[in-house]
Structure formats: C-alpha cells, structure tokens
Image 1: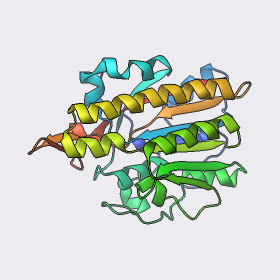
Image 2: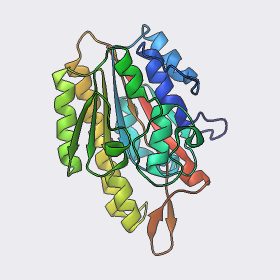
Image 3: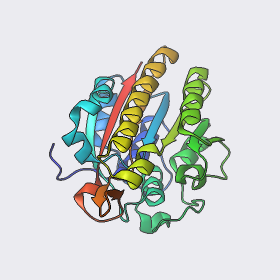
Image 4: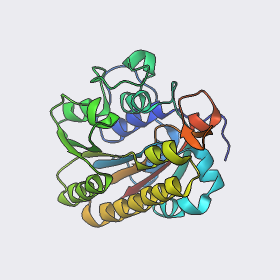
Length: 264
C-alpha cells in the first residue's frame, strides 16, 4: 500500500457527520473523499453509523499478516491506510478522530483523560436529534473523554461484556451512532510485544468481532443504510524486553489500517 499522502484520522468524525446529515458546526478536517465516493456510489446519505475502535492496530501488522485481516476485508468495501496524530497515544488520537481537529485544538496533548469540551461527532449527532451510545471497558479513554453528554454510556469490566452489549445494541436498532472500544490487543502488545502469540491472538479476536458485528448490522438494519468502520487510533512498535510501545513520530506508530463499508 502507498503510505504517502494518507489522510489523517481527523477526517473520520467529519466524514461520518456529513454522511449522516449531522455536520460539525465549526472548522474541522475535510471529509475523506474515498468514503464520500463510496456512499455516493451506493445511494447517498446514511441512516446510521457503527464505529468499532480496536486499539493500536498498526498498518505494518496488516502488511505483514494480511491473512489475519482477511475477514475484515471480506465484509468491508474499502481498506484505507490512515495517519494518526502526535503524540500517538490513545486519548490524544481518539480525541482527534471524534473532534476532527488536531490535539493542539481539542486540548488533549499527552496521556490524560479529561472530558473534552471541543465539539465531537457525538455532539453533532445529538444536535441533529440523533441518539448515540458508547460501549467501552471501564477506565479506558473512550469511556472517559466523551462523558457529560446527553447520550448513553455502557461501561463494562471486560472486552467480552463490551462486545456482547454492542451486538445487543445493534440488534435493538435504537441508536443512530454506536461507538465500540476494544483495548485487548493494545494491553497485550504492551505486555508481551506486538508480534507475540499473546498479542496476535487478541488481534484475531478483534478482527473476528468486527466480522460478526458487520454480519449483525446487515441482518438487523433491513431497509436502512448503515455506515460501519474498523477504526484504530495509532500503531505500535517493539521495545527492549520484548514489550510493545507507541507514542512516537515514527511510521510504525503513526500509520494505521482502517476498514469501512456500507450496508442497505
């Protein structure tokens, strides 16, 4: 894949907002042209969006282990390399993904988890009269930085519980935007290294869940146009002691792989 001239993850939130008829009110990154074209080819505006956020899934993993990502590719319309933001740590990156602006604008510029006051995709959806939900593990960035909004938060102790609830929410059809966070690959790669069996098993689980999520979307939203994505925040690299890390301005940490599709 060509890793030059990649769009930044700041394009994700503005893209979804425009597609759903819920644009941001202030200046943000422009929507991703390839995603606008994808939706246009399939009929125009979307009714709902489901965004799956597995942590730390680097582009180099996709390039080195393409077979592990085959289920994600098979259920998606596009695989897009994307560039993260600096510092390439979780709250900074997801802050930028969901606000459409760089860290210097939204205010999280290090590993900390304050509630963001910057306009987010959730605020744009809520202003348009749409219903939003976040499903995340307790204590993680997505469970904290988007709090204090008139939306629903489903916070659990384990990834398994998060994923069960996410599938139930999709089946309910009650939400216009669902964001789901899984941090299991990130935590395992920190402990044992990005290419350890321990970490790669978690990556396999992330891809398998995404495939199941898409299948559930297609079965549950008959007659509705749903935009869905596999959207990691940053990459990772090996450090001394056979452990993993991220946060640097280096290709391994900055380049990620996203998958997107539309059903209905």
